[in-house]
Length: 301
Image 1 (spheres, rainbow, N blue to C red):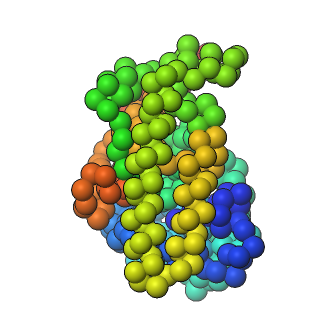
Image 2 (image 1 turned 120 degrees about the vertical axis):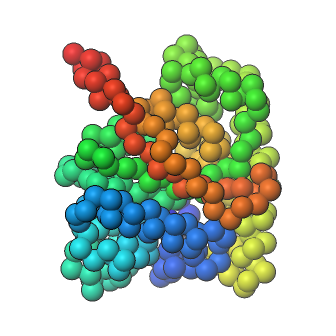
């Protein structure tokens, strides 16, 4: 799970000596199960390719998932990408016994080598979504983006879903969802937010509140007070609409966002099956959509 952006809770003083990646996997639901699923997905890709893969774990935190992949696939090159100093140091220590594993401490956008597998596990809602173009640029033929996250449980109505299906652009403006060039221009010029988007944000906050209560109770029941305290601060951050460094969107919105950016959904996996209002964790396999590279080339001409 990512700790890449140090303006989020894990960059704060009280967490400097904590291996957040390890603690969260014990005191937070579904993360460890997601680790195991992602390792299996990468292993299947390695088997199908018939050769060692180059794999990057974007926003790797302290390198827990990166190490699991390096242990399972010792012939693959595994890069833990983390820019926050403390978890990057922890990742180096964790990966030191694995000769084909390394830590990259610059922004993901500075990585220039081709990649067979790009993993974004718990990172998407922290990262600037412009990184998706960089993902497409780096993926080798047959490469895959494995995107798993702690999403906001689904809060879109049927009307919202229809709007998204017809959207050619999806962008956040001050934390509000905008789904047309006209809405984006109106926001940039006048700060105007459409009423449907304000209503959607209200639904997001109410849905998140229900989810975070579940997560905090889960941690407290098991005695993981550091996790509970962290999640209380994360709740506050996520409820501030304009705080885009911690802004969980619904699975449906992210699916359409990836489609708009030229990706095709190859698979969708559910982790920790629960009622819809508490179904947060999903892992997707995305591949570049057919013809998307040609469209980019036409746009550049």
